[in-house]
Length: 192
Image (cartoon, rainbow, N blue to C red; front, side, top):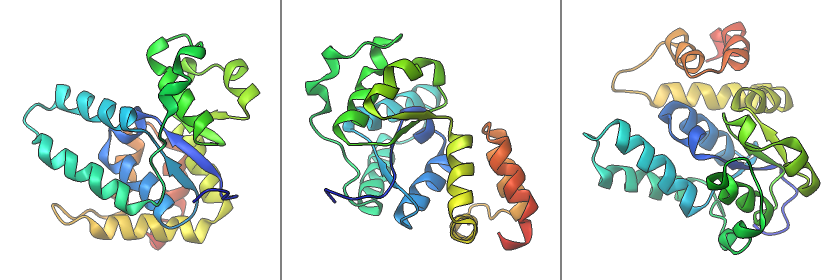
């Protein structure tokens, strides 16, 4: 979708790793609240990290998740970002591919838990904000509270194994280090 004016965010591997957060971020994108993007390298990183922690998981199921992610979000994959990786400097050189994806993918932001890895003085000249997922979700909520709550409700209703109450669903986000959005969701619990 070249030329879109929709707010675009590159999702770092660390926000794709936890399934509930990944599902929320992708659901918001699929509903058009913003435009999520990532690279093949980002995909492989979260899968590699998840399998290292949970080796009992079936890699084929995770590959199916990758396919479903791509089908849920139009034009999500940033390609050719590796062409500029070597020209970028970051505290952790292994994170340069994420900044490269944001630059090549014309992103407005990088959403990551690893704020220190993307110093503002490096990202800002490219017009890229670096946002903690909690701050990003709060901003998305305030832009369209009803749309956001509808997405969260639909996400919760998809949970079948086991089903979750609205309170338990919000508690999951809180456990993932998202206290601000959890408070907003708790304040609107009857809508989710």
